[in-house]
Image (tube, rainbow, N blue to C red; front, top):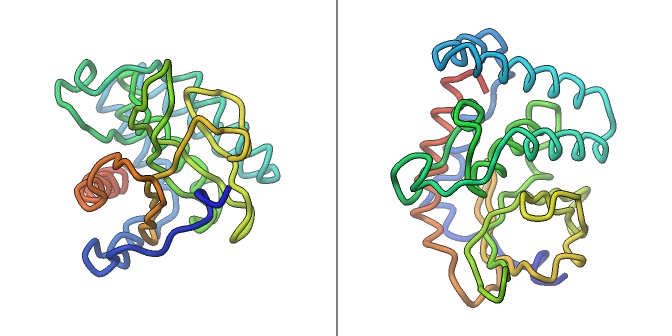
Length: 218
């Protein structure tokens, strides 16, 4: 448990956390989302309409059922595939519309789609963290990303994951060892001994993603 709760803010001056938050300080622009989706094609426009309807429903319920609604929607609408197969590159962070257009994505894409859906359904950004972890899978330790929800500061987080579809408290996910986490407000260093990548390099991808998502209406 302590590994999920411990950690201090790391190098905020370097990653410019204050510059990240304004990218998310806007209401969901449904018209822009649909216009952006239409540029991908009719199927993606239909997927985007379903996404917006789900976000609307999620905004009307309490936070725990909201988490389940969003988690189930994203897990249902995406099939796991590596970035090399989907995008022809080692690492690409897709916006929710890009992921829905492909119908495929890796662990980051699942977490990103859930993050933006929950934000736009009214969940405070302070309650959400994208978390890089080392996941034990089939006897191997793999770099992986999940979305963590904190009901209040210092609480045990609930983990939203594509590997284990049901929501579980962090204490029930001994297969995951957090390394670092971030959201639109900052970056936190975890206690993992094995890196899942350079946080500052990853945050460059995050900044680019926020700009793309904002341009799409999120």
